[in-house]
Image (cartoon, rainbow, N blue to C red; front, top):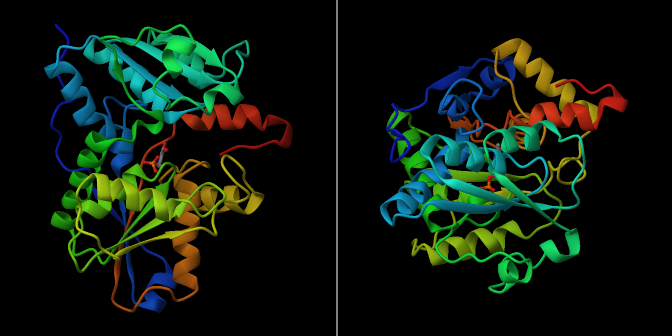
Length: 316
Ligand SMILES: Cc1ncc(COP(=O)(O)O)c(C=O)c1O
């Protein structure tokens, strides 16, 4: 018998980071190890995916849906997490993948297939219309009775799960700042909805552009959260755009792992942590502040990243 929901777990730990720069500036930095909030060791169902899927999966089960359908790129952490969730909770699953099929499968899609998810490839032009109501019928999918999760899993149920993350952190520490990587902005919006007035959320955009402010505000409005200005989006740490990188990012991540035993991913958490250290160096945080940086997981993407950039000798 498959479980009906993700199990309740104790709070993921906060790990203190010691660094001369922090001492010099009178700051505390803690990493919220949500990468350890996982179905099993090395599971793709971890981090912010656990938070974002928790209430979605519950809703799908309580409304007796048996089929999950979602969307993502060929290396998507969300697709991997949704496929694993479907497998362990006993849903049928379909993934709409952006772009053409490439064989052999990359590590993410190989995993997703192994979980039993059916894949439907959609070219990049058509994929842009994935949120339109007639998109699924237009690609021959009858979505009647199917639980459809948007790309990145961002919806109101996801915000609810991420709100719990903010509450959990603030129960564990007197956080003045919570830092998190921003893709769709759903995790940031959920965190903002659970902030005390004295705490500020910092989103680190991993994409080029300045659209997060508007999108996160819209999500908060939809969630009925009180308008608040205790959050902002840092836009200077995308390293050229989504999945783009520079040697200094990978050097930073390696040094961070060597010093603190924490592996970051190059797409999300590496950029966020790089940004946090840069802001610390630049004196952006008032003396005495406690900063909590959320490790949102994403390590399933590392193998695919290394494979993609193997010609440049990349190793994370
Ligand atoms: C590991 C990781 N961290 C952070 C994010 C950003 O989450 P969101 O899309 O909710 O902004 C994502 C996904 O998009 C992710 O996979």
